[in-house]
Length: 98
Image (cartoon, rainbow, N blue to C red; front, side, top):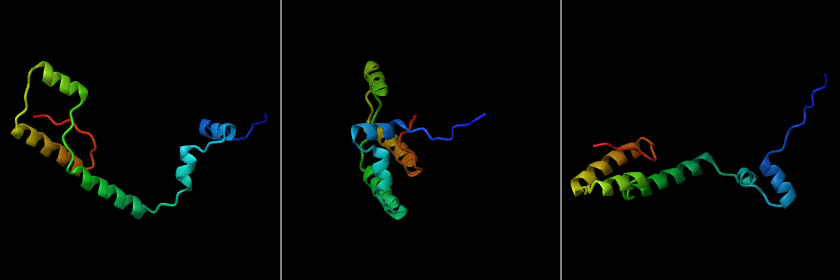
C-alpha cells in the first residue's frame, strides 16, 4: 500500500495562485506585531467602549415596541450597569435581565 504524503492547498492558497491576489491570512502572518502592541490596542478599545450607548437586538426592540414598553432612565441605567459589569469581565455581548 502506498500513501500519498502531499499536503492539500487551502482555498485561499489556490485562489491566490490563480487570481494573483494575497489572502488575508497570508497578509496577517507577514505583519510583525508584538504581544504588547496587541494588548495595548485591546485595552484602548475597552476604554473607548465605556462611553458606548446600550444597544438592543432587533428582536428585543420589536418586542418592546409591540408591547408598548417604554424604559425609564432608571431602568436604562440599570441595564447599562449590567452590561458594563459584563464588559469588565471580558464579555462583548450580553443578555441583561431585570
